[in-house]
Amino acid sequence: MSDIGNNGPRSANGLFGQAANSLGKASETLQGKASDSVEALRAKASEGVDAVKATVDDVSERTGQAYTRGNVAVTRTVDPIPSLFLVGAIGFLAGYVCSELRRH
Image 1 (cartoon, rainbow, N blue to C red):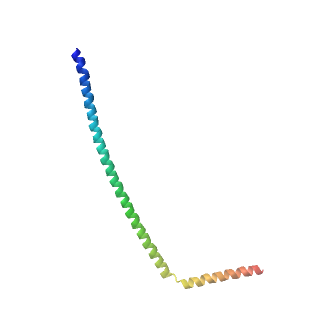
Image 2 (cartoon, one colour):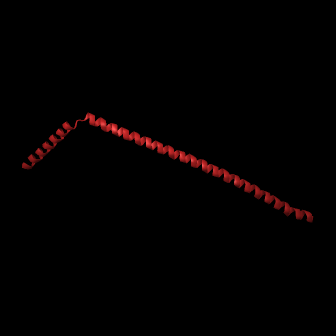
C-alpha cells in the first residue's frame, strides 16, 4: 500500500508536467497563429489604404479636368461684352429709379 501512495503523487506530477508542456506548446502555436493573422490583417489594411489613396487621386484629377472643361465651355458660350452692357443698363435704371423716388 505504501507503494501505491508513493507512485500516486509521482504519476500525478508526471501528468501535471505533461499537461503543462502540452499547454505551453498550444500557447506557442496560438501565438504563432495570432501573429500570422495580425500580419495578414496589417497587409490587407495597407492594401486598402493604398487603394483608397489611388481612388482619391483619380477622383481629384477627374474633378479638376471637369472643372477646367466647364470653365472653357462657359467662356466659349458666354460673350462678356453684352453681359457687361446689360448689367450696366440695369444699374443705370436702378439708379435712375432711386433718384426719381427721392425727388418726389
